Length: 269
Image (cartoon, rainbow, N blue to C red; front, side):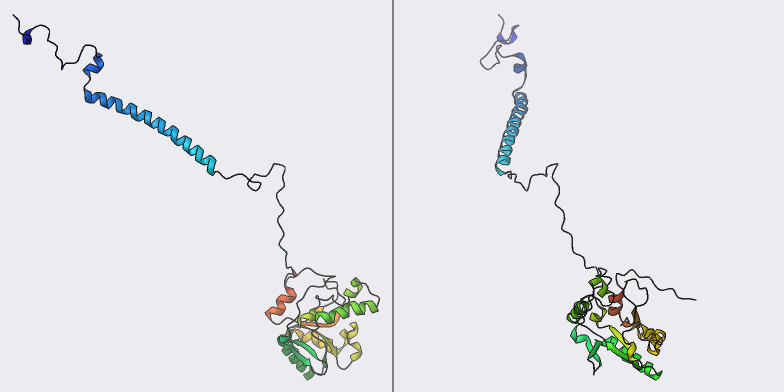
């Protein structure tokens, strides 16, 4: 009689795996089966989570996306970009009939050089002019100031009023007198000079025949004065041998020379 533990085929018990369970599952330990199922669950959960995230993001973008307005739309291919507004320039080379624009000297900068005629110039120019008059007197020459500072209002009468009396066009008048706002006399640095011994030559081209003119030609530069309108000047203004201007400080130099594209004069060796 064979005992149960020694028979050719072991006996089944209620605790053993049954034959109805597949071999692969039956032979796999319980812990291994759990490890096989976990990646599958995680993969399925990840796919579902990604789909939900995409749906939520699309919904939020639809709700919060800014609406397109006319200003946010790109310009059509045929549209022309707006033209930029030009910045106004303050170019001192903008002339009127050959005359440059000049500012009017402040009243506080003007002092009298001829008390009996009320002729005034800027302080620096007045000082040098009086020194020049004294030096000329020592040489037997009498320099007389005829006109100094003139306001823009004074120049209006001189240009338009006298021009009408003489039946002159603006271009004809500009050859003899600057338009208002464009006279060197506005600056307080310019002065018309005469010869006290021959007053008939005042403001006349034959002033260049006088001793006063000859002395100025030889000595005016020592006192920082120069003739403004020599013969055949580039501005086209009539020859004025009596009209001299002061260029002895930075302000006067820049006022008369800035933006004129002038080059240094050639000096003979």
